[in-house]
Image 1 (tube, rainbow, N blue to C red):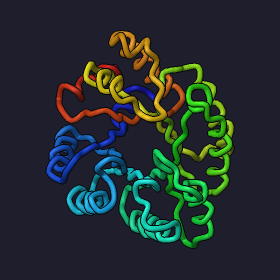
Image 2: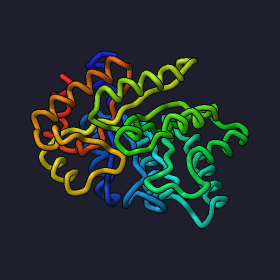
Image 3: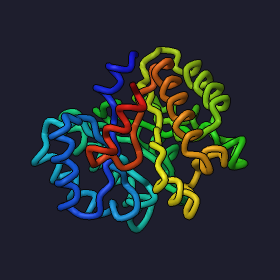
Image 4: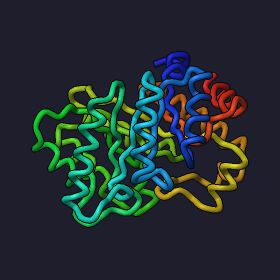
Amino acid sequence: MNKLNTINKLRFELNFKDVDQLERKLNFCKTKRINNINIPCKGLIKKQFYNSSIEYIKKNYKNLNVVYHYSLYYQYSKNKENSYLEFLNFYKNINSYKNSEILLVSGSIKKKNYDVISVLSDLKNEKNLQNQIGIAYNPYLNKYFNFPLERERYEKKLSSGLIKSIWIQYGTDIKVIEREVNFLRNNDKNKKLNFYGSLLIPSKQFIASFKFRPWKGVHIDDLYLYSLDNFYSYTKELISFYIDNNIMPVIETDFSSSDKLELIYRLFN
């Protein structure tokens, strides 16, 4: 993977608060020839608004390549059985869409006996399902968040046989991500998985926001929170690491203005 090919295939996460804002951002993507987008399932984007947004995209922007995140926490409905059936219907619906994939996540708070591992266990018993599920992996949980089970959970998810892609969480310890990516690659024995890596674009506004309300499970060292120049340098280092390891970056900070998009492309050049 080289930088030019990466820029052309970059993925962008689209956050929005209503359909009007969604339409404006999608039209911006169209104008800038951005075809690869991710639709998160968190905050305001959940339940009926999430579902109606998907229908809107399907109807009006058929040529986009879309990854739909599905949070088992935010989409939980009544009980485990009902929630699973709703996800199964969602899965089959997305299967019928052109150029679509699902990133399945447990959510910020795991429901008892209802998480990605349990859903995949049930899902592998269903018939006529395509393997188009992505799962998240956080390299930083053991060292920075006192959670040593991420590797074990990853192997259980992978054993379902339903996984198509791995989505690597953002962080600022390059040695940790190097070690964990080696682990992920060694477990991809058939070399069939697609790898994606979260990328946050530095700005004074983002730093202020993160200091006030850190993102759960995201490790950013003070070295970068108190120096924008250091943050830019690390971002370029992480981009190079992603490209060298055939990991497609996913822009998770706002990009929907010409100035912000130009900054992103400059970081890649």
